[in-house]
Length: 171
Image 1: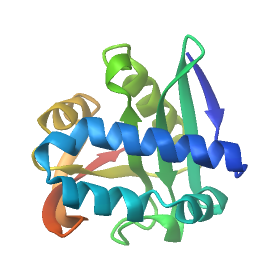
Image 2: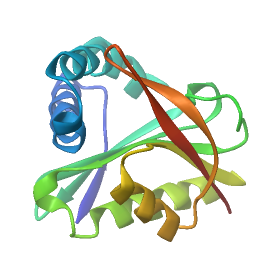
Image 3: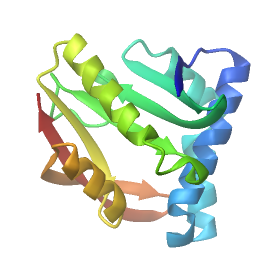
């Protein structure tokens, strides 16, 4: 397995856009309407929006490769880049996605280990994330990684208001 920090090159942004749309669709497509999914993908993974996120010095994006094939990506946030302001001194894991064909190969674990290492390096006392209330597989993974539910927030997917659990891990 290898890891590459994502650059703001057009090639990297297009690659990020493609894998973001594919992993999100693989993970949540069957549980949402085609209209809500399309609206979400077009808004959240717009090229210019992704480019701005990659260029934000308080966000960190990484590609993960398995046997030289792109297998997933990770997005971390600190400071004002976080999607919630309740944990200003923490590191947020905003996106941790692995393509279906690479699941079970410990890539998610490698992503988690990297996120926790970066939090330690940045001297962050906590790591937090949001996970959809119906994503039981991810919730089990995060629980095994030491995260505890501390709240919830709304997650808007297209026109559908959903609930994410807020999970927190103290380092």
